[in-house]
Image 1 (tube, one colour):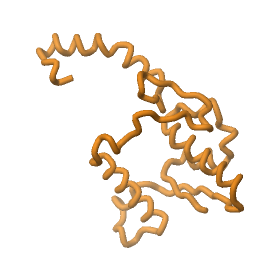
Image 2 (cartoon, one colour):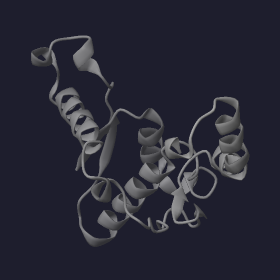
Image 3 (cartoon, one colour):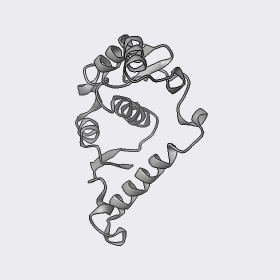
Length: 149
């Protein structure tokens, strides 16, 4: 099975072996995607004779060349980007799970309430820590109403 991805970091991690990146790198940008792909490829290797290969494809090539001139891989990438954009228009109950489980490749996860923090933990925690003060400041400074929040 060939997988194509426009995220070079994810492709590198899959090519070099997920185990090398475990623990230290699962909470960076796209850590949830990396963990899910790592888990999927590991499970495939255990249950089938199928081999997996990942390759990087440059993203957004359709903006530089006409769609007709794209390779098959680039065309698939453009189609996946379109599907990802369409997902934002789905009803909110379909956009995300209420509870996102800890993926096996992640080993651990950080939650704030029921929200799983999948990247930039330090910023997410800082924002949540100061959320009340920030709302109060914005309400007072700009004469905003609580309906905005």
